[in-house]
Image (tube, rainbow, N blue to C red; front, side, top):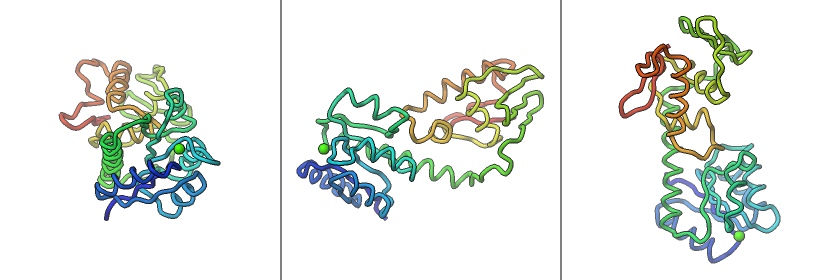
Length: 238
Ligand code: CA
């Protein structure tokens, strides 16, 4: 089944060019010319990806993106005409997955679309592999010998001493702890801990793992708790 892409652009010639080039890649393409039609199409067709222009009549791309973010986890690639829009595009409030600044080449657009869809596919496959279930008791304390994670207080102790962790370090540690013994790829960790509204790359994960190791490993240069899986990602050993 071809992947479905929703193209939202009010300028007819650009809408047509986008649709033509994406269809040529084998995607099923639907187009919408304003924000309200975009919302309707997204809800009715559940596309695999949305290409969303910011400047639209009526409801603009920012508004459309914010609304869709609350309703579905579809990757959104935004088209901006001005550099000063980029901060808003990638900011938490709007939270696009990626953006292109006009003018851009169709080759660039197709490459970005493919990258986003690959990322979605990776996460889907890994979810399937791990068969992640919602934790039954979300606020329990996780204990691994001398390391203890109190989820009610969001507090981590090592040998009885409280370890100060930044929020992202804490979330990352809990994610590891909930998947003890499982190999977790950087991409997957990025998606699950940082989420869809995060624009970044997997080096973010490496940096945070390094910080965590300095805080919870006896010897950060020879980690025993968070081990690196060659060519894969990380595995939490407990
Ligand atoms: Ca436009």
